[in-house]
Image 1: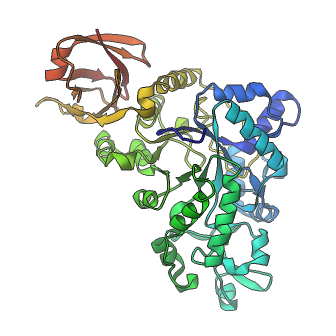
Image 2 (image 1 turned 30 degrees about the horizontal axis):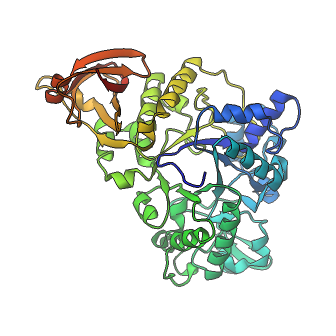
Image 3 (image 1 turned 120 degrees about the vertical axis):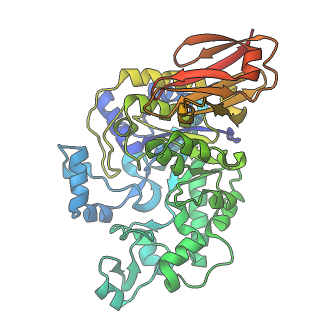
Length: 492
């Protein structure tokens, strides 16, 4: 369990909501310590490499009080949960009061029991770390105010929406450089050397309880971004980047812990260089939602070592539900796309059932929704396909596709292949709302001289093709809108 697979499959679970639903199903309170074995077995049956328990840390009463005065948030709560009641607001998991597992979820002992249950089933555990800010009632606000961005009485008077007073000190609210501050969190000073050492100890304590961590809004702590956001308030620029120092410090004790960055603004490569194992691939998500097939193909032309350290997804707790964002056919095409690319693949609990309501992370429960049985079957087949060693640690290559002078629909098609010794797969996807044709050139040089059986693992169809034709002309495909092939290729 120490060595992570090259391309891990990760499953995000909203921990509080999951345990609430298990409590309702089993007719008794369920915490991380008392999850029935059949529920752990059900998780393990997906064959994920890791479960990300989102939101296990102690939440902030002060943060809850602030959120209950926010009419925009309250409207969002009622949109997602029409029968919302104040007790449904258990606070934001990214407004952390202490990095101790919340007692409502089973406390540290409950998390340790859950980790053991997962490990026995070959599943690793990922937890959150929020580097940019903490709750206003975090102990450090009173004990170590120097760890935070400082203001003064003029700031408090002139910018009451950006600063607040605590223990006689004026401190800044947390923010990113492009939006108004978050009203329920206090801004760390990422340049403060004492803070960095304290963070190394905190992240080390997290690393001792899990196998990896997802670092929230990781790019905010990069030196140029932090400097641009806070200017002279941050003090002198440190010699080392925040993440290089923190990750190196933690790995002295926990060399195998995985670091995954929530990253935007094209900072993925830089964060990889600073020590992250994987960084969010938001650009792929955006191109799948709004872009063309050609924009996706160009994105996949990046160097493979960079792509191998990206996290591919079509939904998580920060994005709208895929079933509400894409049409049914497009959702399946997008799922095949992200799930069969190199890198980590992130799935979100509820994605398989076609849940459509994006739940605010403050809430302890969600509305009932009828599962989409067709989508569940689709994901069952897709996950079975991903169990192949070829998709786990094979060689990935982007395939060329061409068309004809009177038919340029080939530009709607993207294709790639995987090979692990004799195990070969070809993925061809029409990322458009139009029927499209193409000749897909296969990069394998040993196709000629035999016949090949191409089995579509999702559609359960079989095609036999002459290897000589595949070698010289490629594979002709004719795909319906948002259609795809996931082909297992065997010589006959």
